[in-house]
Image (cartoon, rainbow over all chains, first blue to last red; front, side, top):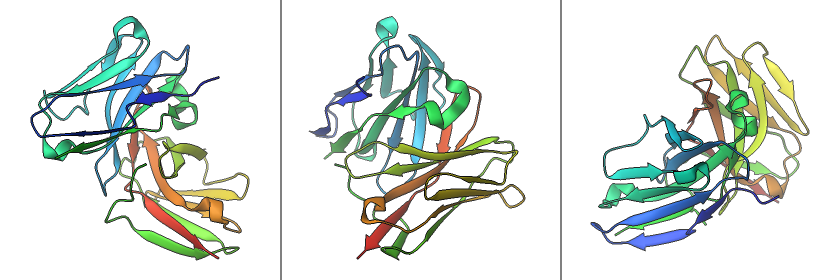
Length: 116
Length: 112
């Protein structure tokens, strides 16, 4: 069974440009999470989807970030316009049952975003 | 892959020695904690977890200790191997939907 996949693996863009990150969760997983790690700091929660609905978006930093999960399958995270402080690694995770927490959350390899 | 954060605490361990990685968590109401391992270019990988009604849990070569009084977690790795070189994160589950809050991470470097 394929794990969580993310595309692209690395993106370099200029300040002010737009970037869209994609996450494909494990098939059948209703729960999808986005996290990010800014260099040298901890991994921070961004938001959580249950199927196509946003369950919790309390970690989204500002309105330059837009996450979607149309159809409840893959998800996209768009940053528009990108700023220098958006640089970091964006992780996606999915789980079938969220109640067991970390054991059941499977992480993708991440997308490394560099804003210059 | 992802490069190591410039300000990550680093633990250098000789191969074969035991490693102890420490973590302080923030929420006294958290009831579930996890240790993750992240290798370069990969996402966090589950190592071991512990519920708040326990103070110790053992896995294969790893032990997690929980001290709720001082909100402290530790991960012990026995007989550290080169393949254990990675960044280790502790995390606490903040709600029933699986929202995780991570610690800053510790870089473990295993030397021969």
